[in-house]
Amino acid sequence: MSATIDPQQAAGPWNPGLQSQIPREWRSLSTILRPENVVTSIAEAEELQSLTGLSLSGLVVFRPQRLALHELLIRVTADFAVPDGTKIGDLGINFRRIANQILSQYLVPEMDAIVAAFDRARSEVTLAVDAAISAVLPGLAPVAAAPVPAPQEFPPAPRETEPVPPPLPVPAPPSVSAPAHAPVEEASTSAQLGQQPAAEVAPENLAQLGGAWAQSAGDCSKLFQRRGSALTFRQPVDRFAQAAIIESQRIRLPTGVCQLERASQEGGALKVSGECQDSISYTSQTAYIKLRSKNEIVFNPNGDSALDTAMTRCTL
Picture 1: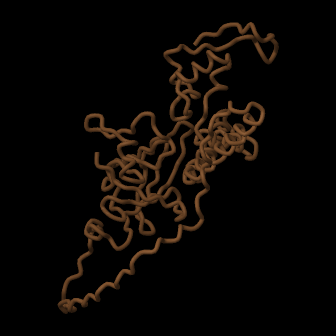
Picture 2 (picture 1 turned 180 degrees about the vertical axis):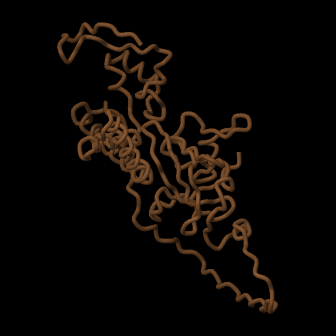
Picture 3 (picture 1 turned 90 degrees about the vertical axis):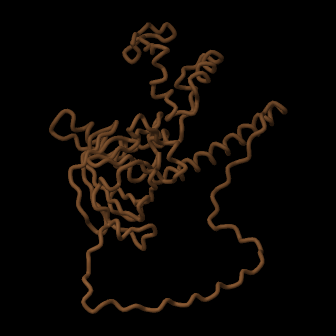
């Protein structure tokens, strides 16, 4: 990366007169131009820049997920007491650990609601701006899309249909008593599951869960791909997706990789602990996994049932 003198601004202690120049072929790697962060393409941003003379950073439209991350970093900086530790790097490590904990356990589970609120606010602002333009310059304001409605608190009333006759009673099967001295065998997890398990059970080990997992089967092809025999996340990675690639000794998430250190059964779940690495920090994390069926699990990041996430095994 090279630096050039910026002739439009007077040099001073807060402006040395240098301006970074990112090579055009590397611009797609810039944070403000990566498709997982913004909705504006590089071509659109460069076209707007040529028309307005504004910088690229002032022209791109950030995704609500990225804006939520920006707000998180601001709030942790302003409102949290981050311990600085005894080593030079401790402050940054502790800051990233706090930010990552809040992001993964509180923001990501509510991301759908955050995106919906963003879309509604954006629609309302668009309508207000178009109305103001129409009042000053009639006929020039574009036709705005209808605002995004807020989610209903109650489901709509069902439409009237013909009455459905009650189901016919099914006779109970005759009871068969077990032999007096029948041996009782301990069923394995696989036997407990069958095709339609009555309750959630703990997996026997992490290897039993090997493969790609997503919130729905429709998300599988959007999030994962095969490269030879290996499963990988499809690029660009959706860092806010509820998804995982589980292997015998590690779990790969959209935000990083967790290396398994311990696994044990606890409270009807498989408790897995390990060291997780992401773009922010290294953290020790614990998660709880339950099986609902051979192809459905319940993933929980900390044991709080309010954060349970159901996931489906992907067939790729």
